[in-house]
Image (cartoon, rainbow, N blue to C red; front, side, top):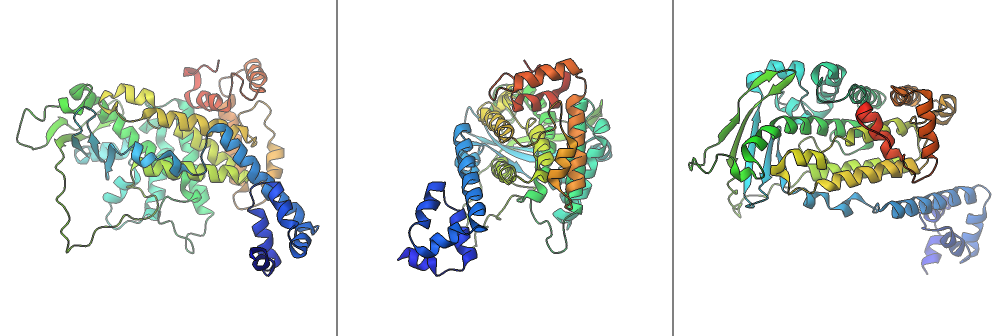
Length: 436
């Protein structure tokens, strides 16, 4: 009966049904179930398309299974894992103590050093919009991304020269992607799509860079637990200032206050509850944002569109600087946050992407002509070629020919000592990271 309904559909829809099957054997069995389906499947135009889709989907599921990647990033449960640290946009945080299960508000204010922040810091998207009431996300994006053209001045001591170049390249590529989009017909209203993946990860680099600056000061005051900040000694429930605004050596210090968080009163029954806004936004928490980053990364990676490959390489470089075990070791008051998750996910995505055998600029003999033929002449082709060329130059920087040959020989083995993840780390950290 089900097949009778299927047989009555137009050919185009029947082909789509075939394409969504799990394994080639299922397609063959479905085709054998009726003359109509047999004819559609064996049509000389339909069969190659169907088998290509089914085989690709089967290959992707097999690779995901081998690398421990679930069907959806929802299965990682990021929101629950990182629920002990929440944002209070544009700059504050609500952090749960690992020792007492008490929540503390950390409020951050750059007002007294606003001009220094504009010149030497990088403001996240939510911060930019909070200072410009009524500004849309689409209007804020060029301002935010434009800051990365000056990373040598803004983040002189924070990152290696190669990493700063990668950040600048990622911002330029994101600007190019937006300029190639029809923003009138399809405006940017959130950070949930593939068009804004680079903006989303760069936004979180800016968010976490600020946390690094004042997180160290909290560590000095709090030690292993934020409970140990001089809050309870006062006993009046008022905020305690633990950092005063200032500027030194290209590092802008905000005013920081900490106070114990008072749970909000229950919502009266006669007031409508505020429903969460769908999608990922510049004020979303880390867990939700990380879920979108992983899902978009996998979707673009599995699309096999070569125009996306430079975007994905930049994303891996940037994701390497998201909170990892080293970050949380330096900030003991955050020790109860599952830092290993970010490290594990990053390693998994990097090697998964490398295993998918996309053309990568992180090879000695990257063939620009071959990549040019792959991307074709679409609106993003020239942009993709330019950034693949840049990434290849970054990869070769500081390495002599003999060293590059040795790396290539070692990486021929799929799980050899030089995996794609290690290559990304080498590119990001430069001379600070040893491949072996």
